[in-house]
Image (cartoon, rainbow, N blue to C red; front, top):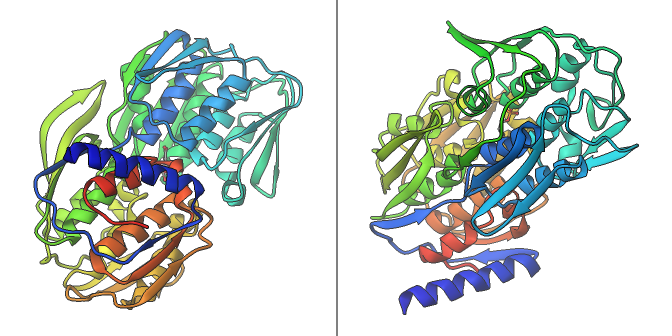
Length: 462
Ligand code: S3P
């Protein structure tokens, strides 16, 4: 019976998402104990599955693929390139035709929607185009930097044209593509992956030196596609070498839960009273779990159980309980990259911990779906927490564990950034106030089941 009620609420909420422009929250969530949830599949791995399977030879199959708008954008792009895709409830099949298998129709326009990963990784797969091809995106994506991939691709001899280093990006037929040596100094996994993928379509050896960032592409090259790739970690850099033009076979892949989605429920639990939660089978790749390392350094006791390794990617259940005795942190920027998508949540936890926290060298945050460093500052200021900007790259947060929000708060005009929407919901449900939050549809970008899971745990949203 209880199960039915939960299901009905979840379904209704889903409908509300589709039609509503905004949601209201005025009640904190009640304690929840020993609850068990699954979060949606990992976005980075889902998009990589789509791109690599489109370049493999034969039928590849994925289970638990994230069915979000970002992944659907990637699917629609490869379909336009002549790749057949079958989607059923339990799996997604992609019928790749090998490295040279895309069909480049004349003046093709590909739309990556909101997805930076799709735009940047897919552009690199198009360097052997036979016809002029353009890749574009939505309002938010068209504001984002593409120079970071234009630079290495141009160095390879690819002919490109962009709008001041932004989308739309047009790629022309190139006569000759040559391998390069490239230094990726932003710590951007998308940029690194773009060079690696372009290396796949280039004769000879491509060398990359890079500031470490999430390593899903390296792990897939090595353990799934089994293509010749050499990876060395030297001091503060990774060195990668790729042998180009090596075909690979189709493969099967099971996508684990997304730590970036689990993160919202980790914080919901940490900041609620007397609650505990287990999140099942989440990817805990060390290049992604900065948020957990940071919270544990602040005094949380988040644990992994039921651990395993799947095709090089570590997976585990995550156990978390409430904690109102967390300490502030002066974060070493070396951890920035492994928590890059979670800083809105980390700022929130810092705001309710004991002492002053500082975060630096986070300029990249203002280059995401919205200006997230600015949004972190804005939200904390709006709710009444003392914050200071550190130049244009950091933030100082004066934590207050006893702070309760008593105001009316409106969150709008955030370029439909899914993570701004979701962090606002978590703040409202844990710290009170009367909230009106616009654009609930934004969750469809990365975490379509977000509001359903909130409802299952007892969160009241109108
Ligand atoms: C991603 C890399 C990160 C991250 C993004 C997904 C990826 O971006 O913020 O959500 O899948 O490679 P950057 O490469 O810009 O750091």
